Length: 429
Ligand code: NSS
Image (cartoon, rainbow, N blue to C red):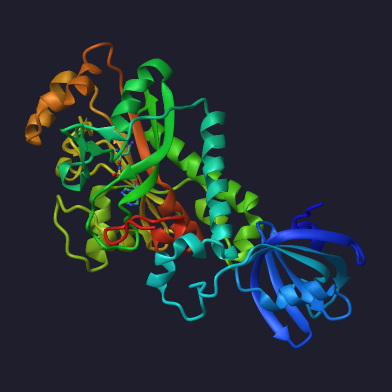
């Protein structure tokens, strides 16, 4: 019977075991051959020794190549020289599939090649750990939303009008008509709150952003939520509770994987409350730190880095000027120059992880903003309808999964957090 390697590593000496997996490495010392055998649960050393193993096993072991898939039968031996303290003394080996000789993932392979061969490289325990952490993080988001009465909805990815500005739209030929890949499911969520009040979605968003930074992908996983009757403070409360919960929970559920990556999640960084500053105060910080600014400047990666290093926790920057935010943001009645918007910047220069705010809920105001932005109201007719039939104040936000992982795991680039990243220079594998 097949056993996971994890279980073999816990078994007492002398236990007969059968393990199925992939040969990570072959080391030959004459009539003694060592295999490092990997399955999803771990790695174990297999010793194939003349006199102990069947003759056929020795012949098979001699012919094995890296990444061949095999079934190994043998007994557990405690051996402190083995990397995990345990080895399997092999009796029999059956080859499931012999790998070809030229397995391309070799020592000293460059980073570009590793992404070219991502379909093979993802076998590495490091990437597997990352993917487990990612899976646990998504689970934590779902736990959070469910416990707060949010309903998960799934929205279309093919759309006809921009949510976040036309310059980053990917065009799709939709049966001869022009359509686009979604940048955000926000508008569908705004429709859904009229039936469900609190909704969230976990799905990809697409942005044709040419910017080559460490935090932009062309396709990223976007977690978005929309809440009826929420104002800006209520929105920030939810975001704060959510970030606190998912970071703590992932640190807990992914303890082993985080350790195996030689990382530690700094849970003290998400202790509540998070500071909340207005855009105007952010400009003052920048000026004080010698960064030249002016009213109306959008905060880019450099500015966000400076601001976030002023705080030990994630910091909300609120009340951005109208000009730097999308048309749907509600204007602050107390200061008509600014919107009721909030971005959350992650600590240590990681920059924006959340973007959100209060939406315009009045028809006349929304159509005025659509005209001001040079957009065509026809493209937004169903969105405008929402303001014609029982409109209510509401607010929402979006958070990027890869940016959260980059921040909490100190990754060099958001693409590290993706199984198959999409960037301006990469659409394969
Ligand atoms: O553009 S956002 O700031 N806001 C929205 O899309 C709103 N329509 C969301 C909403 O209110 N429902 O993007 C939100 C977050 C942003 O803070 C990042 O964490 C992430 O989405 N994001 C990205 N991650 C990776 N790559 C790219 N290109 C990217 N763009 C946004």
